[in-house]
Image 1 (tube, helix red, strand yellow):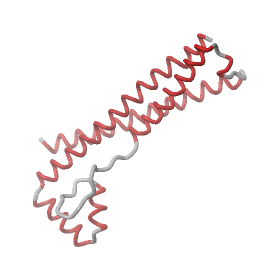
Image 2: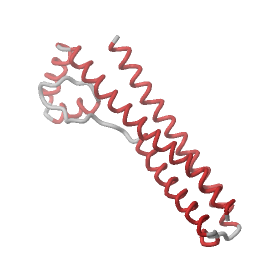
Image 3: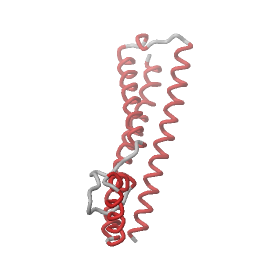
Image 4: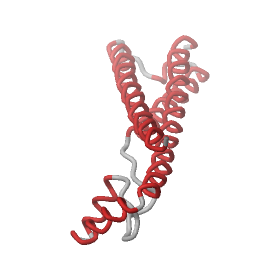
Length: 160
């Protein structure tokens, strides 16, 4: 059961990365289209009414905030603590940390992981669920910001 949950968590992390990447690409296309159309016309935000400018700059802030949130979604995540001797290996960063302590430490860590597979599995479940929760928190924030930007920016142009 725990192995299946760990597999599910890893797949969920990959799905969050995919969603974040697709939304970053969509933002790039939306920004390119908007900038292209407005640049050809020689338009500037100062041409808008006061209310239109407020909407425009609020939309721009939402857009940039959304981009940063989506980038935080896809940024690689590591464990919340550094591996130390006596702990099982559950993540690539653990292997790297054990190897930095020398080949004997890595060998001992492998033995410890084999000796206590349930502890390693529980640690991996804990860390992976934390990673997935963080990714989806950033993804939700990015989607909310992008949605707000897609309402505010064209709305500002319509309000004038």
